[in-house]
Length: 122
Picture 1: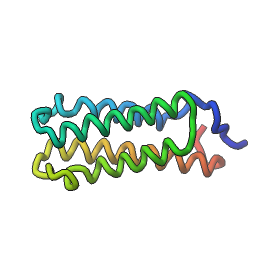
Picture 2: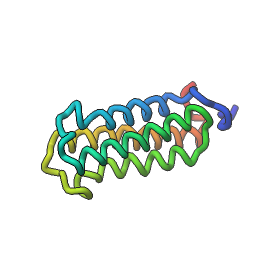
Picture 3: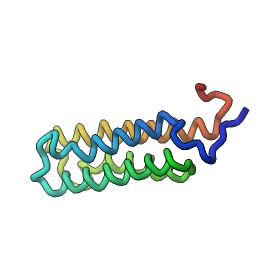
């Protein structure tokens, strides 16, 4: 039996994981003490908002493109410390890399489940 992809709002654990990760990324500058550093703080705020927005959108009304956008956002968060130039701030790097990987893996998991419903856990 294939998974229904329209109107699945709220049924995906991966979307909830992405939402929590986006919120954690958004609050990480304050929680980890790098809110005074504008580059990493702004990247965390923008990335957190984008990831949380994609997750909320997917929870309300699922569309596959949201998972692809979240995957790209997760990969960008992993690369951000080196792209923006704050790789020397270990605590900020850990926040970006760990949360970016979680978002990317959750996105990949949801995309895989969408395309391979026979192997999905129910």
